[in-house]
Length: 197
Length: 371
Image (tube, rainbow over all chains, first blue to last red; front, side):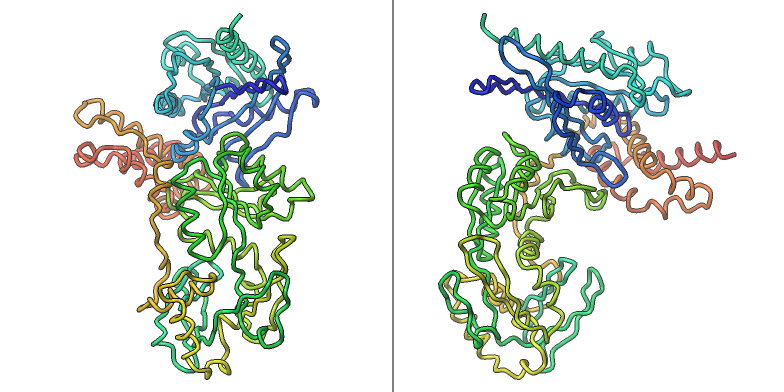
């Protein structure tokens, strides 16, 4: 749940980038970090391994303007994607306000996408969240690779409800900010709906 | 007696088996040869904080009793468990349930060590660490990050950065290694010098501004042969004095535990750690009577294989080319099987070994690509 600090007039929202191992979650955050005004961002924390694989999570605080006089700060997180790290994923999902599912478009990772999105649904449900009810967008990443699944097929498998989805090449930034703007908008809409007046 | 090895193992040695000249033992974990000799340690008499031990006491161990450890964890049960372990070992413990409370207590009570859960609510563990390390008033505090990242034995990597923390520990290691890690941080000299029986007493600053200095002599744990002639009664007396009473220091605890020991064994401190297992909860099982269960089990097996291959591309290539795939990746494969068996109901697993099938199919596919 978003954290509202009335004394400092700040709203803190938590967005989690979820997806299978090596799908590009960290690359999304790195690009956002690289391209964001230094005044708008905090230090990017990346608890990664020596081989740059996300170990616990990445964390990037990002200021995105004001809502009714409250500074809105988004905290972006990634999860470790490998099947082995489910305990970490559960931990990181605690208090989430919005989820970006980063799918790896390569044909050999389609099963991992499906497993990961199932896992997301289960882990959210364990904490009382319904994936169909929280702000949620999907990104089809690595669209520049030769062995990708057609977007229509990916939609069929991963996005039967037709939620906002975007094609992306996170390494060069394509689709990264579209995805971020979309989830931020959904989270803010949710916040406004939850506020009186 | 308990003989700590630098690798973290604790060897329990029956005092009766230690001859006058000592006994040499090999650490079963790392293979290091350690020498255990008869102890002649008396519990150190209490002295006021800041008091400098005289020449007489410098030949003995001055226990670092009472070092304050702040334990920050969301779970009350986990806090209680860690507190019990540390108090038992002679530490003073305070606790905090969230990041804000932990920050406040760290500023006010100035602990020597902060054990902080990475996922602490309010302020994350590494953020808290950053704040304390950036502040001159608190940057001396030794910070140990507590992680819950792993529920497997080996499938892990060492973090490239701890964001200023001095060490980290995984939850399942708490009972075995926490006190050792704390001591290594507070009294590193003890571990560097422990093998040198001739080393002079070392002055150790606790880092706590008002706690004064303690003195520790490594001989207290590993006596040289000249000390081996000292009467065993001193150790017995020390232990007897402690019987039925609260241990006055971690060294006393060592001695007490040593007296209970009848055989040499590593990992001899096994305390209840189930409170941490909940956080490592397993993934929900599939319904074993559902025909879809088989398809799910197969898919899960393939994904484990895919993940292992993705993160070990070089080994996979070598293994396929040289026929050493299972050898090169044996640890990962074993961890994967553990996860597979945890997730897939036995009824589904008992029919076919889908996990092995997934590897066989993967290797076949890779060979076709190579051809």
